Image (cartoon, rainbow, N blue to C red; front, side, top):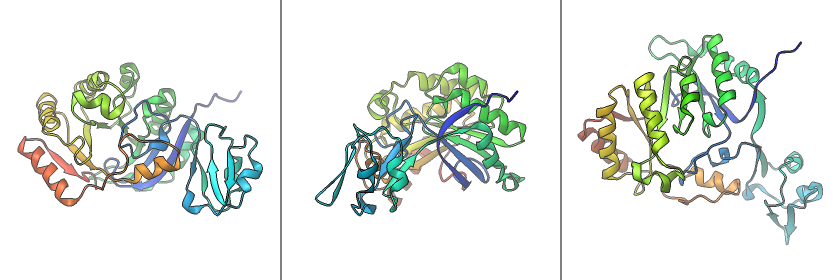
Length: 308
């Protein structure tokens, strides 16, 4: 009898990553996220299922998608391609006939075994005495697919592969604890001041900071990641709260600043998603220096590109 295989939704596997944990890593990006961060750089990960991405700059108006779409979601009007997403069933037929890659599918269903087979291709790169590499599970929010996440961790552990999880902290405490014995390091995102969380992410902060406490006190291996957006969440209030967090949880290895870049807004447009923030200029070097100085003055160990 064939063993039952646990499958899940992913949208990318990136090899030879240097920024997603110590050493050389393979990062697996899971689909699905309960947060709606107004600056999200992976908005195509929001939905669990497949997303159709449309890049108008690559479209030549050939009409192949219009001809094959059973839902009439595609129309060529005066040489211009119009995609009515409310009609789209995401069957992917349009993607198959698009010769110019203006239409692409984001997301696929894979078995945990398939993912680990792909991760194992990089296993010779993981061994390093100073900074041992391995698998990083990111997203989206990995805990949006807890059973699949846990199966990935189990199978990676069986192969002796080191494990990091990047999480927003918006997860069931029960499922979070189930990952403790498999995970070497948590990359825990903190998005802004406690009172601003609902505005920035669409969810309240209580569960997130409760889980931060749980990871810090019961696991103890974590780096706090700070997505920093100029003029939005880089407030004195936020920096003061981070100093308090470090006093409360000295187990935190590092506070890593993740400077804002506008690529997420472009990917959102391609996926037909309206982001709350819109596109802002990328963080410049002067802003990065100010952030580092402000945090260090408060006694907070902080870095940009900590793992690189």
